[in-house]
Length: 455
Image (tube, rainbow, N blue to C red):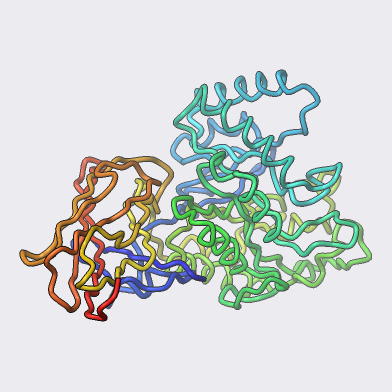
């Protein structure tokens, strides 16, 4: 990657360092943890005997639900609602439907809407996955939701981690996400949805374009950074590990149509529990750009076999057994440590190399560099004041614009007239009020004055 980052912990400046998937690990000094940024959630399927109290026992602050009737049962939780959508045959009717549904969900207190599900798979996009098409549908859905419920967070449909198949029934999530971003999708979602399933690998396994594992989402984040998009969280709207049905005396293999393609994912119940807890910990420590994470799933094992067949893979991601008793993964998640987000925007400064080189014989105003004033926290906006500061014998500075909103880019100019040869350090302060608190961060740059004898 060629971008550079300047991250500032409240009240302290940090030198420019190359962007990394986990920039806070290098920026926080003795404390490797970023500020709390995760939400903790679980999928709850409708029409089962699972009690809403189980979500309390798991100590989750989010749930993901599928039907309007589920929302009222979780009045003490933040709610992500999955809104499945067909490709419109009548766009005006589609707009009206979205507005009606969003109005109803807002009245019920829904916090976020995920627009569709895994559109990079033909099973969810029947006439063939198409990132341009999905982006157009997302644009319309976003504008209609925001028109009637601007407070609702709009999450793009979680992409399935996959490799492009010969029949193109599945399109690589990496390629699909890149095409979405290149078609302007970032302006039509507040958070990007993704499904970082662990498959049969531990959560710490290195990501790679041709490998399916939990950390594959870091490749998605790299796409954002390459395009200068720093102010969009990625929400893990589904993830988990598949428990081996043989532990419950059920024999499932790829020959069963409901289990086909899933046999290689099987892990033991103890491994499922261990990997899941470690996944939450990895995201907490290394992904400051991550938002809420939703375990798939609480209760699909409770559906009768005539609804969800015994070898349906959906059953074996559950945190409960078919008799409703908790699995090791339930107990481990319920007892794991967690740091819940404050659900506020977070002021973060991202910069390219803030260095200008000039000759003493050619004084004048030079562009030192530019940086982005981004929101790296929960979706939202803020405004900030920008002020350049230099030592008494340093250059006069001009910043433009002096007042910005999150997502804006600031340019920094310096007047090098009268500067002596050598290295001159400048500073730029950025101040915002977020959550009734004043937040101040600082970025620094350099001017190198030389005596080469030429301009």
